[in-house]
Length: 499
Ligand SMILES: Cc1ncc(COP(=O)(O)O)c(C=O)c1O
Image 1 (cartoon, rainbow, N blue to C red):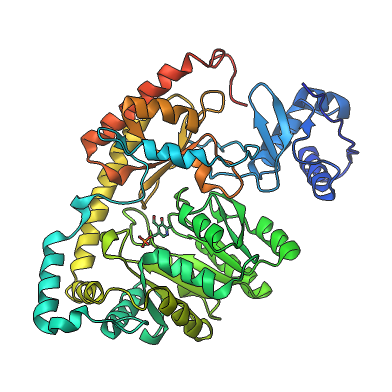
Image 2 (image 1 turned 90 degrees about the horizontal axis):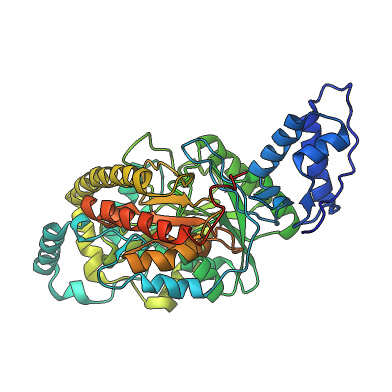
């Protein structure tokens, strides 16, 4: 094993600043000046305490805080290291432990292949991002489609204008005004799901090679868009309040990104909700550096607990935010109705890109969703769906506590579809467990795929909405069994406590 670096630090013992804070400041300064580089091993806390003639608890506290801020990573049995550039800090779990940081590894393409294995019949898969059929308002949709045909005849099957069916754009305006977003129908562009809204923004605002900043981890679909549109994507670590603004600002200063993409409410995959003060600070930062913000609000209304917060677009006084969302996640994924709310500067260009992509979003679907909005069907279904999501979340939480290995961490989401979990670092990682889990008949999304830099090896995302309670229970039971089978290969697991 490499010897740890000796730290060159002079402390001011008579000063007002506590010793551990001085230590933090020195280590940060040395990282930022480049004299401590990623991967450098730091002395053990006992050795550093001896070297500097200070108490060990000061070193332990300093290391813990530096780890929580993403400057350091700790590995059971191997020591403490300077973390990578964007080390993937994770929100603290609700059981109070702050997740440790991990050194980035190369993203593994075969992971996506592995995730396909989970689609075998008989596997209880928590890996997808959709809700099953029992969440869809089927009879109401059938009625709406029949009504559209009766009312509009063949008109329902012609091309629609690219911007979207005007009554639907008006209805979206009314719908989002209830969330606090003020706009006119002429600022609403109807899209083929939220996914197309995101893609149009990337195409309209960015050129090949431009830099897109995202949260790290982020939505896999956005990573795909960035790759296919050949824009550079850079993830900024998150904490329990969402994207780290200190790191974002440093990055902006050095790299001049063109666009910031965030999911302020029920971030996918981490479930993080950005509090109001950080929403405002993010907008201040974006305005200060004149960088547009693309807000993905697709999970905003899937809240089943707690108080809603205004979307960024509702707080946007300068028109810097583009708001993308849709009626897909909540209940109608296959109908593909999304929308984009922007300002007049970008609108024309977005419409041109949309026209080139698909001329218009399907007419029949737009008109049916319009009727459902007008008749309050979507609002009623949303209420039902959120009640059921809460029930399934509770089942998943108690099954996780019962069946998953000790020291597994997870969040307790107040909305959205996912548990964001972390396996103990001294056992099999999420990809290793996956193989055995699929053999046992359960699957999940391997955390790695959500990172822009290959972090997240011990992370897994579980869609608790995807199955009925009995299957959730059975799925977790199988995951636990799969883990216990593998654990035999990790001798010393019990002996090597997490740092
Ligand atoms: C954060 C996020 N944005 C957008 C989408 C795409 O949604 P849609 O089905 O509306 O295209 C998803 C789907 O999983 C998502 O998780």
